[in-house]
View 1: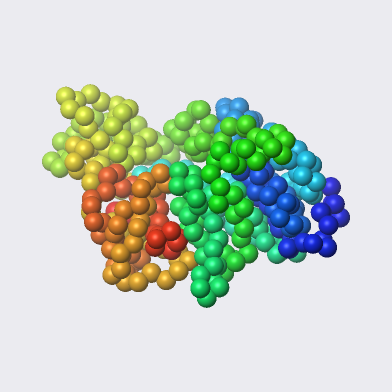
View 2: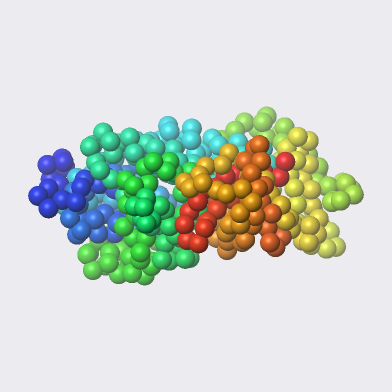
Length: 371
């Protein structure tokens, strides 16, 4: 289907490239833009070979072959042109490899941020320009608003539970004015209702959950399939009790543990213990009591800002996706930001993001480190 099939340009508000994953959110986003009078082009990124994954395609996946077919079906239904972009190589280099390397470094990765950074808001921005589009739209639960000076800003969505601004802190501020989030003012039930009313095939489709490329095999098996046994053997070490350093057990690799983990530690003990720290230098997994999971200060590095952060000011900060933002004072350092929380935070994990908000406005963020 070519661009000549785009809805009439006479009343157009501009040409929009819509990232269509094959799910209900991006499908409704595209349909709403058509209703609003935009020239709409749909595009799906083929990012992963799901023949090697034990998730049933179309049930909790993203951009699989069935998802591509669903996106194409929606595009046909709402009468827009549709493209499939092969991004498997870029996805592996920008998302899969960093995901594996983070676990091998004792961190807890956040692949959705890399997917947004290097594919949705990099690769698709380039495609948007190639197709001479004015805007890029996605099905994210987020909003673009304008301040009293007319500057575009990203703000949290109406649906607090589904809000996805946490994953958007790396967006180049210069492109915010060209982004559209058509469902950011809606709650999930309303999105599904619109899909049903429009007869979209994805109206009752299950949402993608967890890490889309891992499948039911689990992180440990997925990582095992990505690297050699020789490398995994180098990640074996000891489990030690904090703070004294008593050796509790051997372990089969630091990639099998995350901060806050209490099950599957590979040992028995008379009290419940939690993973407190993972030291990649000597492969030590430190365990201890739950009270030792709480920290009051965190360093944030490799920061990216959509709006300038004031040294010494207080912000609402999320340290993981489904975490209620907590108040923290931000002090600038040579590496980024040091956060001092009003209340100690539980299970702060290196590799996750600290994302800053001022009221509902997304300020930016960076990567958590405890080093």
